[in-house]
Image 1 (tube, rainbow, N blue to C red):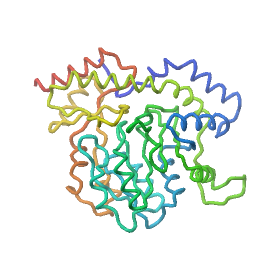
Image 2: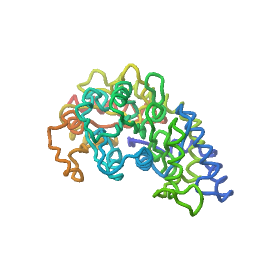
Image 3: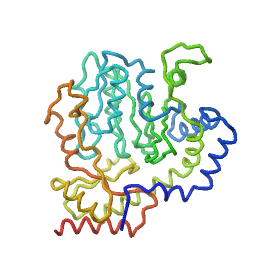
Image 4: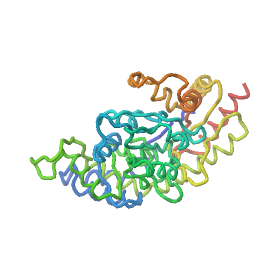
Length: 368
């Protein structure tokens, strides 16, 4: 049996008529960039996330970059973030001229550990970027308290966590800005790249709208040095279709995760931990194995089951960040997570027999 980590064709089969009609509507209108579809999506996603404003941009990475720029983060500033995430979380900081400062993670949730943050704060620190990893929110209340004490901005990296909640509040709604990704593999993914910033700050939203179109609020008149980061109308139209299904898809992911949990609970694996105040969306279902990670992944690959490691090298040890002078052992929990975690297939259309096959093969590995 062959089982992919994600099967987007299965999702497309369900929404094909609606998605095709939405794309055809855009083609017939000949309005391909921004426009009514994007404006409608911005309102719908902002409403879904519990914020007042949404600003569509070209990618989740751009959502981080433009949020940082609009908040005035610049050369010489420092921004605290996680080392256990996709590089965009730190790359965005570097691309606005600031310096990423990495802090270790909670080994249970893989999210930033709030207890370790204040020791990283200096006079140059201007912001914190908590990452809501794998579909579970970071512990935002202590982060917000720290930010308030030190007059810091918070940009939530919610690229993997649209729809997740923390004490009843949606991911992206708790900081100064929330960055969303619509990359095709995300729980709300387009048919190309895209992203959005959600916020309750009108001034911030207005500034990002200017920055995304070359620093212009009126054609050919430029008040800022901006960039080209506009969301395509075709992506917006498809995402509007998918948004209607999102809550159902997220519930299906939670059901799949619960099924895995029940069938794997007796094995020498560490299953996903969900904090009592969180609702997880399982963008990824990630297991931790204390030894034999490579053997486990090879065994499952040979059985036709696709697995992946997110992420094999922590950001503080990446070659591009050698100039920051971190060394192995500096952030031990993040380093351990890189060496010991792997993801198995999880998506709404995954069938029971497929999950049974995955779990049986994992049990077979431990039986030797």
